[in-house]
Image (tube, rainbow, N blue to C red):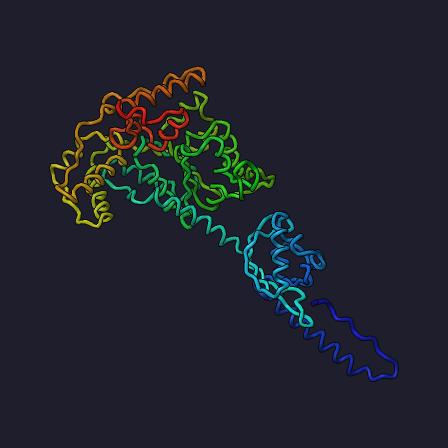
Amino acid sequence: MMGAVPRKPSIAGADTHRPASLASLYSQREDFYRSILDSLAEGVIITDGDDRILYVNARMREISGYSAAELIGRIGYEVLSHEKNWRKMKRRIRERLTGSAENYEIEMLRKDGISTWVRVSAVPYRLDAKVAGSVGTVTCIDRQKTLERENEYLRDELGVTAGTGDLIGPSAGLARIRKQIGMVAPTNANVLITGESGTGKELVARAIHEMSPRRARPLVRVNCAAIPKELFESEFFGHVRGSFTGAIKDRTGRFELANGGTLFLDEVGEIPLELQGKLLRVIQEGTFERVGEDRTRTVDVRLISATNRDLEQESGSGRFRLDLYYRLGVFPITIPPLRERREDIVPLATHFLAMAARKLNIPTPALLKSHSGELERYPWPGNVRELQNVIERATILAAQGPFSLHLGAAPKAAAAPIPTFHTAPPAALSEWKQQEKELLVAALKQARGKIYGANGAAAILGIKPTTLASKLERHGLARESFLNG
C-alpha cells in the first residue's frame, strides 16, 4: 500500500518535462509521509483483510525485531503472536471486517523469541466503500505490565506488613543493629538475619532495603514456610501455561518481580534441600528458567534472608547446603530477644498503643508506671510480636473499661521449653520426622490446641504460627483434637 510508485517511461516526441515533474513531486510527498510515520513513538502496521502485512513503520520494526522485508506480505498474527492466540486473532479480524474499531492488549512474540506486551488500536479502512483492511498503532507496555504485577504483589503483601512499626528502642543491642544496617545497606552484599521468632527480622530487612540504592525498586517477600514443597520452584522462578496441572496461565516468579530490587526470603531454612542448588545457581550466575520453559532469564536481585534456625548446624546435619549458607550469610545480623533488651519494651509498647488506638479510632489509653513495670518483668517468649498482640488486645478491651494488660504468669514454655533435636539429630529422615511430630503433639497438648498468642503452641516451640500451621498440615495433625488438652 505504501510501496514505491513506478515512474512512467518517457514517450518519444512527447513533452516529458511535465510528467517527470509530477512523478518527482509524488515521490517527494510519499517520502515526506513516510518520514512522518517513521518518526512516531508508536508502531504503525497496515494490513489487508486477511491480516497480511502491507506496511510497518520504523518503530514497529524496532518493537518486533523484524525488518520490513521480513514482514511485508506475511500474515501478521502468525508472525507476531503466540500460536495460542491465533484463534482469537482470527475472530478479531472477522469483527474488524464489519467496520468495528478495536483496542486490546496482547503478548507479542518478537523475532528473538522474547514475549513483549503491547497495546493495539486497530481502525478499519475502506476501498470502494468496502472494508479492505486495518491501520493499527502498537504501543509497548511491558514496563506497565511489570508494574501491575508488582502492585498486585504489594497489595497482597499489605495485609502482612502493615502495622509493624519501626526499629524502636534505646538499647545497646538495637543500636548495634542500626549501625550494622547503616554499614551494609549501601552495598549489594547478601544479608542473613537470625534471631528468635517475633524479634522483628522483617523490619530489619525493610530498613536495609529502604537505605539501599535499590529502594526505588520493590522489596519482594517470600515466606518459605508457607509454600508447599511441590510449588517452591514455580513460586521462585515462575512457570509457563500448561507446565503442570493447574498452570492455566503464565506466572511471573518472585525473582523476576524483585529484579533490580531486593528479595526477602523469610524462614529460609524451610527451603527443600533439592531446590537449594537451583537457588545457589541464581545467586552465583543471576540466571534461571521458568518451570516448563527452555529460555534462560537473567535477574539482578539482592537477597536478604531470615531464619530462627542455626543454619550452620543444619548444614552439619545435612539439612542445609553449606555453600548456600555461606552465600546467603555474607553479612550476618543477629537480633537479640526482647528479654535481653528490656530498655526497648516500654518505648515499643507506647508505639503499639498509639497505633492500636488510631486504628480503633479511640483516645490513646494512658500507659501507667505500674503497666511499665509489669511489661518489663514479663519474659516475652514471643518477643516483639507478642508485645504488639498484648497491647492491641488491651487497647480493644479498654474501649469498654480500664486499660489492663492481662499478662498473668509467664508461659510454662519460658521456664521449661519443649526440647528440640538440633543438637543431636536422628540418623534417619523418618526418625527425624517422627520426633518432629512428637514435638508438635506435645506443644499442642500443652497449649490445649491453641496456636497463636503467648501461651500458644507456636510460642512454646519458638516458631511462627504460619510455620506451625504448615507443619501440622504436613503431619496430618488437627488442632481441634487437642482443644480439651
